[in-house]
Image 1 (cartoon, each protein chain N blue to C red):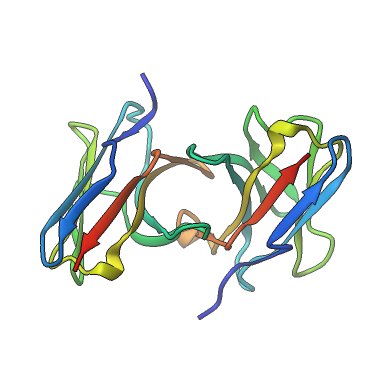
Image 2 (cartoon, rainbow over the protein chains, first blue to last red; image 1 turned 30 degrees about the horizontal axis):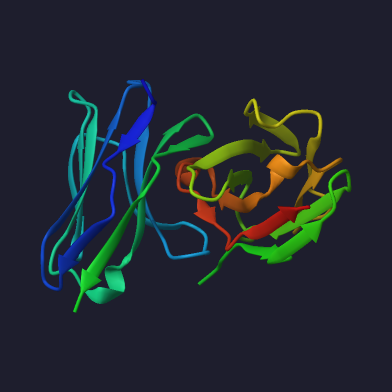
Length: 109
Length: 115
């Protein structure tokens, strides 16, 4: 079983839609959970960061962690064409981040 | 806003040659990292560096690789004898003081092509 699995894509939604992106993980020792956004041929950009089960909101973005189910989600409300990018979940253990493969999101105007 | 910078943005080299990839981390950060992303694959951890020594490294980071912080601002990754399979995007990242070291900020990457 892979350490971090991310829903495969790509995903295409109309502008204004609510987007749900999900990852599961197998290592219960992971301590911190992040979502990164990556535009084509650019470095990952940190979007959200949390360490406890529950929800964390930042503007149109909500990160959700369920440690008992080993499941994390990122919700994007009122999606915009500028949200079109690849979204990566990442989890930390010690100094190392383990990434999901990423899902490419396209928001159609 | 402070950011991680990397040079060069692109590097083409012949198999067997040495390459040095350079990074300038965010100025008050204490932890430094290298990751790589082969085209179409996951971002993979290579190495972390703190207090002038390697704190953790992956299986990928073998004797061909080395890291150095030669001065107060630069952080380098050296690949001694490049192989075709080293072709990838290499990302440098840095994170802050002990209270925020988990929050890693990435540079734009260096695209390495080994011919």
